[in-house]
Image (cartoon, one colour):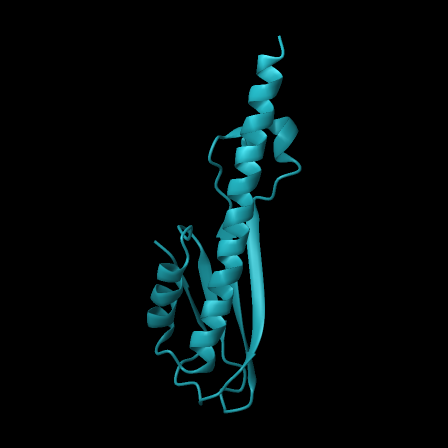
Length: 126
């Protein structure tokens, strides 16, 4: 009689941990993207590929780069939007899904250390 409740509790804990891991991964990806953009890591496509490789859970994530004025000392912004995936499917249930996020979004502002040879753009992780 108690087993279904315990199984639901364990599934919720697993999903919560998995979602927390994805949140940290998106935050790490945003920091990596800002670092690459600040030192002119190449084209938007190249930087997107490097950011997607740095994130473990990046399938379907959109990486958007904005160099601002594009000159040394100017500020730019990078944004990552990533869909949340579940491990057990527990967070997809109607009565539980209302408290779990469906998208993660992280934006960082950075200072350009080198003039940006790239323009506004975005890419999607495979």
